[in-house]
Length: 171
Image (cartoon, rainbow, N blue to C red):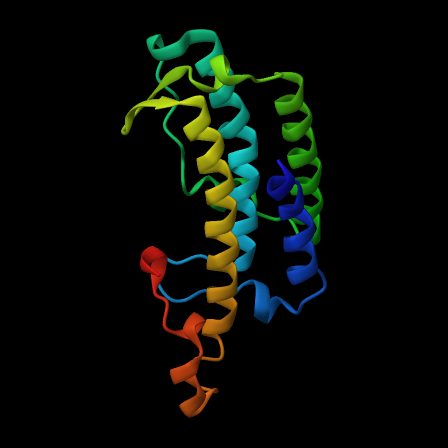
């Protein structure tokens, strides 16, 4: 929970008040910008982590999770400013963490299994660990997307800049 609570402030510190050139550029076709990443995290707060935790606790493996729409942010974020998205994410994350605390999870609950639509059986503990790793994945992605703008400009230093060597989620 300590890391999950820090993600909104991390994104805010990196992105708020930056020129749109920094927040709307991506790495090419079918890739995401910083703006898209924040929208994706918002969608996850609304439809993924806590809703799935509650499904596991209530239904166990008898009810599969709804499939996650990885591109919902394109529709859901349309017309919203990045500061508005950052504020929305901060509020939603605080609510999610309050709900998580209220569940008062112990070892027995964390061992409960649910049904992922493509991965099959998963435990609540695995879901919560994936939530943390998901945040870190998108923080990594955000730094990579922003660094991409300097790929050519760094010249020979690019050899030493690992973030410029990453492509997609393979790094």
